[in-house]
Image 1 (tube, rainbow, N blue to C red):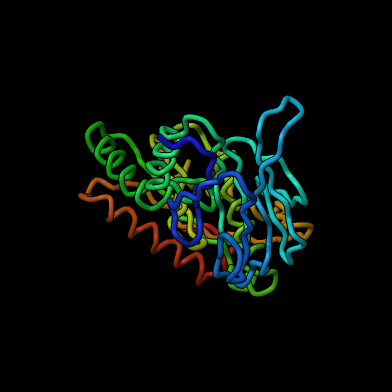
Image 2 (image 1 turned 60 degrees about the vertical axis):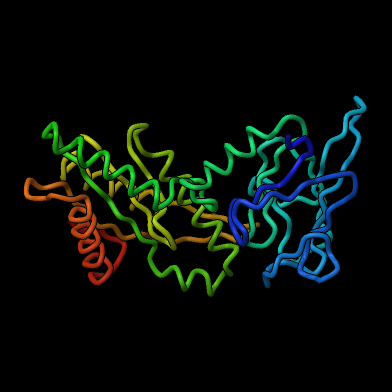
Length: 278
């Protein structure tokens, strides 16, 4: 049984790795002499430590303490100097994101987290490409069986490399996460949204025809253009382009819908970006 508290790597090197937290402090950094080393240029030599503390009730808790790092230590996307960790908190050091699992009978929670990692993008918390492939196969079959519409939107951030070059990869990662929040919060519960990789996202819309899907895509485009994305006090603005397509009667496989949507995305990018095609 896994009794001790631990960190589970959600994003970065060694996804799924369990890092036990025992009696002493765990120092994280890039230097060779630390307890947990991350080979990442955005990580300071001695970046932060995770240490046990006793709360007023006499119970042992864990806290994250920044050690004067260059790029900061983040808990649930907030820069912290010292923060007491709660079960489920996300701790970010450089580009690596870990989830804190509190002590106790956590075996089930750990293995549940490992299962979740198989279908979840660790950076944004959205579904990943594997989950997208499984979902579109299921929804495509349902659409064919019942003769109901199924639409797909593929979204790509415009000039994302420039954003990374201007503000740094940590800011770029924060922009991806915040775009993920925007997408998740502006869709129906039955819609699927996932990150396909890089700066590309997919939205699957059951029971929505092409005109309706275009409206959804343009709503997302406008909301993104209006949004002020932030990373540690730095404000970023960016736009998105999108391809939109709906299952056609001649489509035999989900890949045909994906290819057509991708082609429309390519047209949108070549046509000047910040636009919808389909």
